[in-house]
Image 1 (tube, rainbow, N blue to C red):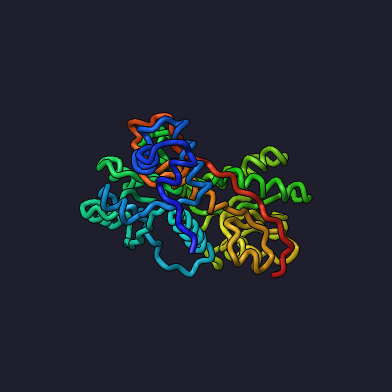
Image 2: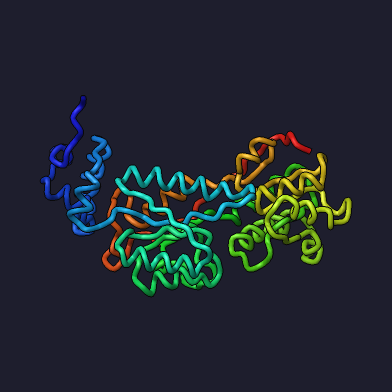
Amino acid sequence: MARLPTVTDVGRVAGVSRQTVSNVLNSPTIVKSETREKVQAAIAQLGYRPDASARRLRTRKSSTLGIRLDPMTNGISGSVHDRFLHALTEQADERGLRIMLFTATDPNDEIRQFSRMRDGADVDAFVLTSTFYDDPRTEWLIANDVPFVTFGRPWGIDDMNDPLHLWVDVDGWSGVREATAHLLAEGATRVAFLGWPSHSGTGDDRRRGWRDAMTAGTSLTPAQLDELEMATEDGVSQGRDAIRSLAPGSFDAVVCVSDSLALGAILAAGADIPVIGYDNTPVANAIGLSSVEQPLAEVAAGALELLMGPRGAEILDRTTTPDEPKHRLVKPHLVVRTRQLS
């Protein structure tokens, strides 16, 4: 059985002392960036994995990140959270970190869970999903000096670079704009948009992408665009009913804010109307639905890097690392398919 690399081996390859390697692993901010990069390169070259149990005993850190497990739903788009969680867990393990899952009935209950886990020193930081306007969760975490990163922007907050609110998000504006532009390039002239009710930060962002593409690519007036815009709760039946409310012949393609709504749009619009969804769920792949893909592995990597740097396993002290990035906006891409369901 091959011998596992040690801290001493890492120091030998990097040309530094064993203590310097230890500092990079446990207190990276006190090590010069050039030296830190040498050690991190040696760690990657050797495939060194720190002894997580020993580190927890030594530093009294849990080496654990907490994240809420979303409630079970019957919706198609629920797989997005599952895929993100899988990517986050896999990449955290590569850093010697664990993921603690917990449930909560609503944001206030989630805050109570934050308080309980903070008091018990169960986690070092939290990863939040599904951010929204006036989110009380982030306000509580900031007020109580608890490190966190969100998958989703701080909607409604002017300062998008707050060092206490780290965030990574997918550029929904870009994704839906690309989808709409694709339909226009394929010959559509009246692309309808099927979105969520207002005051959804994510939904509003995606809607703007559609509207900007339609404004740039057609001669339709704002009033005419309003007639092509619909909003409904997420779900297949809701999408079907929304499309049926449009006058026949008033649209020749549909862009949707989710794959669930897109499937409903297909059922209502028929085979002759192109439909593009969002999230690129397994259902989209199964039925040949074109959809916007969220690169969730990249989102997970971004969340961990914002919290701990490129390879570290310790939460960065933002008061001593002012130049570290505060957010990351990941660009999605359109997956075009030939539809099999009509």
